[in-house]
Length: 330
Ligand code: NAD
Image (tube, rainbow, N blue to C red; front, top):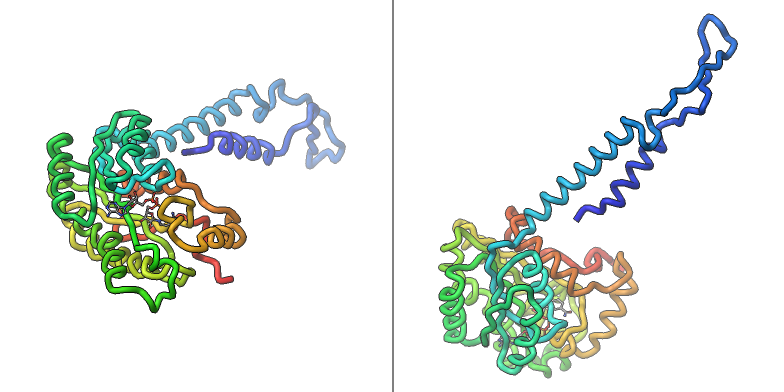
């Protein structure tokens, strides 16, 4: 939100820019070249405590507070209902998005993949409003149907959907790309890209009950550029980003938006499956304009913006949240 201190500081520097009057003012008359000393006003207009200074400070505070309120009301998830797919543990990017939206007032449902049941249930206890927690293998149409039937029954509609599931068999992320197997390719594309289409389709009737909706998925720059061992995941992310655009065009007339965040590298469970991932982290730290890696909370905040009414004019977009790495050439 607005940094009031920054606003107050700039007000102070604006004040400093106004030439200060000395306690005795010197006025030169055109007819009389000799300086005539005259007493200064008792309270200079720019002095703290003067009527003008307090009025300016009050106006600056009021403006900052108005901007604050505007942003807070736009990124306000009160009465919003969301489904977040892809939480495995506290480091999951989906978890950061669930936290950011829940903290802003959303009621969320979380889904987990079988083996993460216990961990996701534990995490769920930490949210302000206890979420609905459901199993979902995104490669299974019957699982997807069951999730949306339950969400419809409990929530009666949906305002947003977060797609944070991705997978490729380990061998595909360590062998030369030319050795990509047919089955590895199929699985990576099915779980990491097709599932966005299946989940969005299933969410549509629930979005329509609420007059529209917002979908967000997570991608990576490996869709456009080559990163060592990212291999078939890069191809899956390219398909995912193209799906974002085609879905956005398809469902836009129903007031449903579809966007992606392309996150910089973060040490998560999925990332641990990519051989040599630590060296990618190091290169980002050295070369990204911000000279650091990003944190999951930064993706969570950007996601909250895109999912909220503040992002209401944005669809079919891939927003880079990568400390600026994507703009670098060398
Ligand atoms: P993560 O391991 O926490 O999340 C990946 C999730 O995918 C897990 O919850 C896992 O259970 C789920 N998943 C895999 N197969 C599934 C299936 N068949 N059904 C249902 N769920 C399944 O890791 P993460 O890094 O938070 O990944 C979330 C998303 O962010 C992924 O799409 C990933 O590609 C993307 N991303 C990650 C990074 C990074 O560096 N970590 C960078 C850019 C984009």
